[in-house]
Amino acid sequence: MLLIYVVKIGPRLDYVFKQICGRILGLEFELTTNLEHFIAHNGPKMSYGKAPLGNEFFVQSHDLLFSQGLEDWEIHVRPWDTTVGFFATGENSVLPFDIFATSFYLLSRYEEYLPHVKDNLGRFPYTESLAWKHGFLNQPVVDLWAFKFWGCLQKVFPELEQNKRTIQNTVVVEAKRPFEFLYRGFLRTMVGFFSDLYKLRLGRLVWRAQVLLGSRKDPYDTFKWILKLSKSSKTRVVLFFLLGEGYTFRETLKTNRQGYVNLIKFVADYLEVGLILSYHFLSDLPRLINEKQQLESYTRRVLKSSFNDRQKVKLPEVYRNLVEAEIAQDYSMYYFNQFGFRAGTCTSFLFYDLEYEVKTPLELMPVVGKTLALREQTVGNIEQTFTTVYRAVQSVEGHFIMVFSNRDFEPNKDNKIWRYLFLEKLIKSAG
Image (tube, rainbow, N blue to C red; front, side):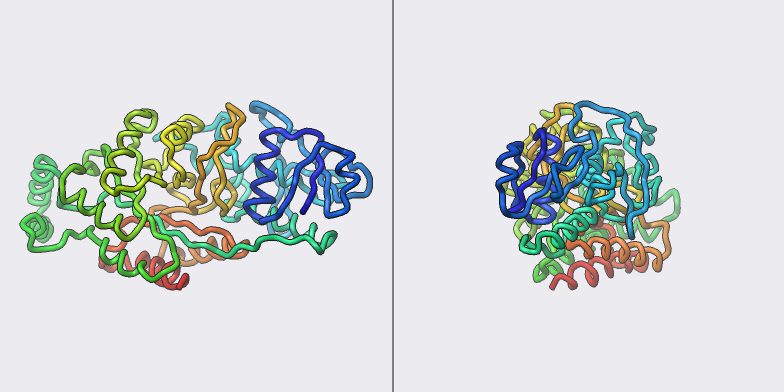
């Protein structure tokens, strides 16, 4: 057991030490403010503060974890072996940077509370992030820092033990448009027919008619293929459905139609089903709760997971609503148009509300990105980006989570790369 002495145990400090020492490193540890207890302890111990007490294992602290509210901290990102660091420490510190303060800065999404330029949907763009500006968006730096800390601890306290973890794979399938032609409603179906006719897309016109007449399968209905391949794999697969209004007219389905409900029930018999929260109602708590209850009535299970349509994360309001709705896990913490680690980690973490200064029970899942972010790249670059990020997660035995769409698995030449990554890299690799 590692005993850690600090002058004061505040909510920020407690939160980040539990994340690094507990969730990432799997260490048994205890925080104490009792100096006599610390001195008398004969096992592994360290102090975290402004100055060492003696010659003990010491990490110098930044003021961030002992502050309240928001401040525009001066940040200087510097190289640190194969990664980077900021909030530099003094020469008496074992570590050159205060990894606990830096980790809290990234995990709490501190920078997203500060003034920044939003995109056209009101989201925090990756170009505003510290990680993008300083070139470490593709590194799970919080986990890398934690393992650097562990390496230093091992040298001084070889008797320390940790609960080692192994890499986990999770595939998220966004079924926001589970069908191309079915359950569109009369008006949308007629608009589609006339649009195909006007643009002389006769093949598509015939296909639409065949699907509606029941003589041909809807092109976006790839669910049996997904279920068949994931059945014997250790990779976790979660399918997310939208029950509320779509962001656009084209995306909205008649979700109360029995065929749509039957699809959700069918998938829920084999895999976990999550909920895509409607973009237009993320701030409407009663509406979110209603959508949650509706999905639970279909699956006859308590809803565990959700993500926000268009990955809109308005902090802290949206996440407070998820807490109130008693949703356990959120999969929205990533950039819709860029691969990488938005919170600097590949380990799930709890949402910390910076305005209330409180840790919440909402678990944020470290998604690395979605296929949409790679679509403009060549096939070779797509695989290279995937491999680079996957190996980064693998190096710290973290959790690799990627978002696909059911449309990515439609059997055509443009989707070969997505079917390959899903099957060969994520499903088969996990056994």
